[in-house]
Length: 492
Image (cartoon, rainbow, N blue to C red; front, side, top):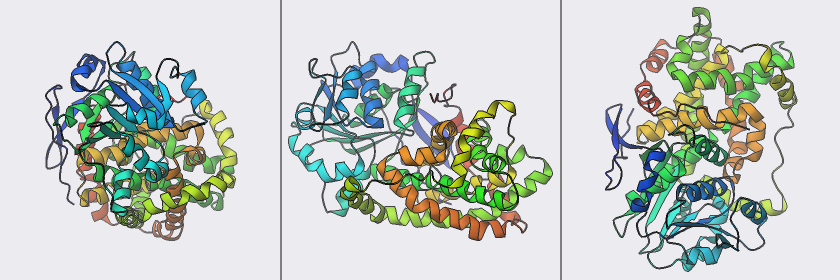
């Protein structure tokens, strides 16, 4: 296993600290509202931040930035395309034409010193040049996803010369970015972790500018990566353990338990409810290894069989996804879908029999406390570790690995799925994630059903279980856990 830390940095404004990770140390910035007075210095030279788009991230980031910068000379303006359906909601949240905080996207692009591009990936791929052409001299381009870099490389394009290019990428949904920021008003440090990247730095101020942006979003823990590393880990993750693999796993498990004789409610509780509830909670609070350690000996053997059966097929799929993200195949698919989906929107995936049980299962949550199902846990943890190992072998830094493979899953996405269900998440996430989960979820489902379930009838390879119990990820997660906010994300 290899992993080369690339996220070290220094700051002239903030006081970063180091975090122990396997094989070395990484630099991180611990956030909190006590740092807000430093924001004008970090964002020196920025008088206007333009936020293009009012999707989940745009809606959250524009409001967080505005609230954090209140009382300073830095303004936040939202830019939307003509006749945008989102304009009414932006106005309802205080961004209006009358007060100069809402305008046409091209006009906002031309008047911003930091332009944060938060429209959908495919739309940005198709329309970025219009925004680039409107930039004022020396303006900084801000991204919250590296998708545009991958697209530009696939078409032999580039970012415009003379402009800084930075990214701040929250490791969670836009709703979580806002809700935990609001919780931070009562509990300092509550928020969603973020990575940051500096792709171009013509004036030497990019690191502090990105750190200021991240602090203003309420990020409790900010780590450095590269724009390329970010989009690869992010797009792979949402097709694997963050969404696609979860969808495939719970569908496979539900069918498995129904065929074994479980009633529909029990089958749902042993599949979806177990992943989004007790398993996610155990990992969030105690780490990956604790899921196995807390099991009775007989259940631990079931966990081991499931883990040993699922690790290799899950990792093979993660490697395949990674290759197709790295060579641009997945990105091209997202861009190609843009026009097709205008006239033929994606159908919902909540029609399979298991999702009819969701409401009844949620209604009986107060009646008893579910324990971790060892078979489900073995499959899920094996898939998570398969992604971790693939990212480590590809050279991602440990902060990125644990955030993209574990923390974002158990502290942001799975709590949302627990409140709504996995199918709802698949049908209401970003277009990029929806396309990916629809493509790869069935692949994971068939891998579990055709490869993992039969193999789980045999004893696990002891070497594979030893590799899990001694895995360096446990050290990395323990370090990251010390930076975890003291509150869980609230899902209303």
